[in-house]
Length: 301
Image (cartoon, rainbow, N blue to C red; front, side, top):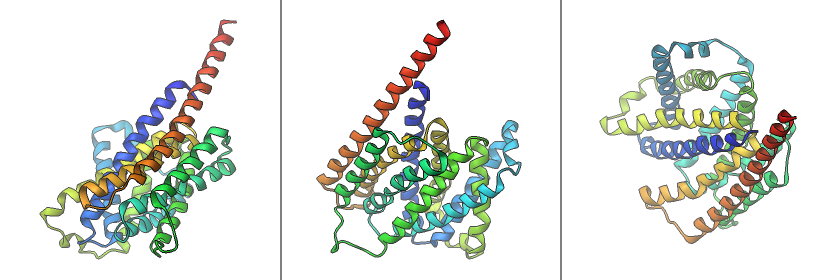
């Protein structure tokens, strides 16, 4: 990895964090009018419309429409569709902070899958950021038997599905472009959603739902575009722990927009997560600079 890749990872993951938060807000805005499947159909179909429109004006993108790696594309789209359904449903049943906190068992699963499936190295700092991120999540959530809600199992199932989805996405980045990866995910998922939706579901919506509709489509597309580019820039075990920061961010969103409770443990947990992320990024940056210096020294000789 080059030193510049660290900056690209941080930049793309910042876009991912903001996009997922905007999508969560939009799902809440549509939850009273549409079913979860119908909301996911809007996300996928809206993304396809946006991508096809872009390709009309940028011919160089059109090669992304060619079918390639379809077995992986179908598998990752199906896994993601199921995980997204569980995640979106949980957003209507649980506080936003709890959903995002439980979701972040995902980097633990993904770290193990990345080592086993992708052959990535597990360094001390990479393991440390996963552990500290998980500890920060527990600080925020403070789980206990009295606080347990059955709907939390939906989030845990979604977390496992997202981990597998992201590992398959990382695998695709080695041979497919970002446009093609994002297009085929949405092109496969849109018919799946339509088949399970009320054919006239758009008739349930009014003009007051337009911002949420646009939010689901645009934020859903930008989230996966940013995440795919982040995974292209670096190892999954570096990229995904940054996503832990969604927990304190969405807690603030829930407090600001939905008057959900916010306490000091959100900030304590967020600080623990951030310390692990900064440790890992600093360690990776040092290694990248050291490799760059060694390569420069080798060329000079």
